[in-house]
Image (cartoon, rainbow, N blue to C red; front, side, top):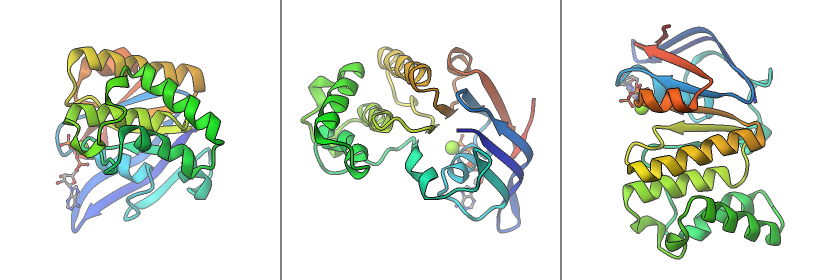
Length: 210
Ligand SMILES: Nc1ncnc2c1ncn2[C@@H]1O[C@H](COP(=O)(O)OP(=O)(O)OP(=O)(O)O)[C@@H](O)[C@H]1O
Ligand SMILES: [Mg+2]
């Protein structure tokens, strides 16, 4: 999915926290968003996710405004993920269930993603009892399982140990190669953005720098 942002402004009271004239994120790319705390990264991501509507300007998805189909085709993973008080397996199958995917296919897809993320030992655990890092891993698996055309990641590896970061980065890249989906990833880790991203957007005080 291509994302095009025009004349975007987001105010909180009189405070202008995001101010972007023109920004295009190309289809099929992995785009990094970096910048200091409070520079507007999460605000931008939430606007693109369709969760924050209090902005001025336009956001287009493949040259169209957001609609029901857009919501179906995208997902966001928050830094502090929200998982249901159910088993990990049930959390991961949920996006497929609500999209009416065939039961046999759901089983295959969930098993495969659990294997790829190397979280077999967690699959029967209660999701709300997982550690911060385990929750982030499960949330990314849950996001990838339904193959969204747009994947928004807000600091997805901030609590993750080095070995698990490797697994998550491997799966993010693999997902992008296999599906051609667009991925926007907010990160404070410059090395990570260099490893993963085709393009990098630098935000400072709500504006795009170079
Ligand atoms: N609900 C809100 N009400 C008022 N101000 C807000 C609100 N949400 C965010 N802000 C302000 O908007 C600015 C941008 O916040 P945002 O969360 O987008 O930053 P960020 O770049 O994601 O920072 P971080 O790296 O710390 O996650 C900050 O100055 C913040 O205080
Ligand atoms: Mg943030």
